Length: 289
Image 1 (cartoon, one colour):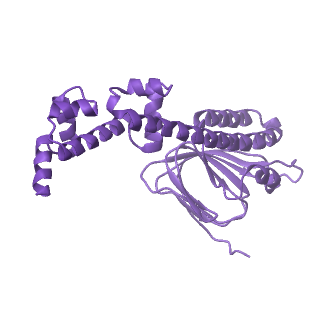
Image 2: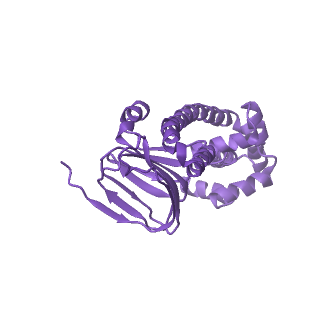
Image 3: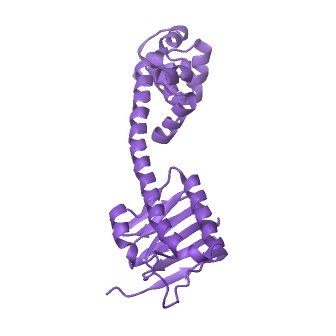
């Protein structure tokens, strides 16, 4: 048997919780037994093995780290961490910012539903529709507060709905991420194959059947750069090779690499490489001899 150990360093700046009257011996069974909105102070730390049941927590502001089932996952706004019943975990922040979250504790009776919806190794989900899920969860929290008479009945209905929504969002994000990656690669290959003839990102967006903002988002998300920067790197790399391997004047090199004129190429070349094209050519010739 795992020795129970619990270390908590939590500074609650705000705590709203819902009472389900769990101490009543005649209470009806309910899947949710603890539902709370919290704002915690910086450097919060929890390390525990406990019997608090299954737990899902939605981060609504701030950043944290969650360790569970041998995995470590960074959390940010829109993350949902998922903790299984009676297993050790760590949950902590490492900065000076407050952390806001909505936490839902489930009764062990939720196990069949949990196991059906959530893969054994899944401990966190980053929502693509975090604003909508947050608003929905807040609205339901407020409803339970206003109407205690049907609290348990409504909580039992909300428990599977919340878990199904989170996991459906994860599946949707996974599918869209694969599709987006393919589209990003298609755009990157298009730029690579036609870079000497491309003069603006509007051309690339049009040829790839995207709007300009979507093109920039794809490159930022999948390549951590912009399509304009990627295009310039290709042009300048070719210009550097031509400076080294030919005696062509700058006007011809500008034409071959797709720049409007020699001054425009020279300015871009120096910005990226730190030296003017003429100096680059002299250094290359000196090194060769």
